[in-house]
Length: 173
Image (cartoon, rainbow, N blue to C red; front, side):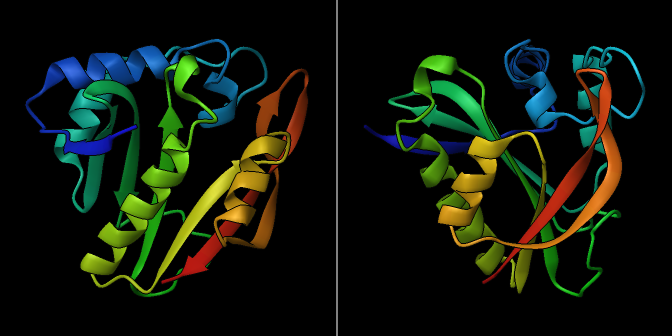
């Protein structure tokens, strides 16, 4: 199994279409995207993702490839405005294995190691992430990867008729 990473170029709309497909996947969209309103989550828009990425400063976005096939994405934002602990030299990370057939094969672990190496190369001191309290598999995964809980934000995300906490985790590099 060969996991590689390809930087998303801000002019590559094809990658943004693929990311949007994954972000709107019924099986995972409530696990990877916050719903800040009661009711159904809004559909992600490729154009909106594309335009937001073009305006972003300090965001690194990579496609995850397994044997040459795009199966997900990983990102690091060195200027994320909503950190739980606003400490200097911190990056916000996120990961999505969008293709269901490629989950639980070690792709996520390879992606996390890649993004941690990127953080080190950027001279970041710590990484922070958020995971919804009902995403128990992801919480266990991040724990296994050495991330520790640093706090919880009450009533952060709406899912299945109720408000849930966002768990914030960190890892020092």
